[in-house]
Image (cartoon, rainbow, N blue to C red; front, side):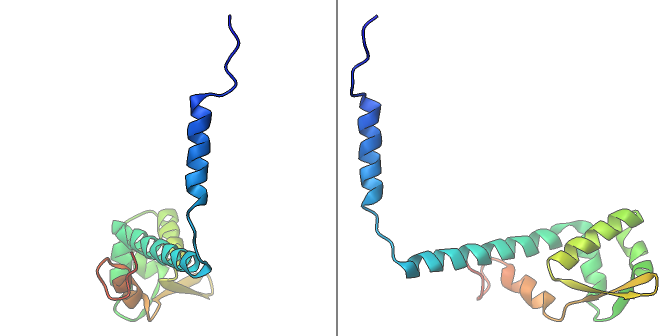
Length: 131
């Protein structure tokens, strides 16, 4: 068996690639704009993912009437087991679309006043949507 040559073609390719990567320059403003854009897109996707589930969609539709609803009122609307309803309401709370207020052993849910505006803004093509 012969010895390997000291210089491999793949090493030269890697060195050329590293050199070409070094020639790219960026400013702080560009990197901040990319980070903000990425955050906005991630927020929009999170909101749309939360609303895309059929159970959560029915809950949002019921809460959109502007009132406060007890979990016992939302149970027939959701049509799922209580533990599954609790999970879906938690997802909506975590995305900031609904708020919860404990009343004794019951929990009342209300749609956040700007929830519908935030969902509209998350849609592609809206004036405040960022791609």
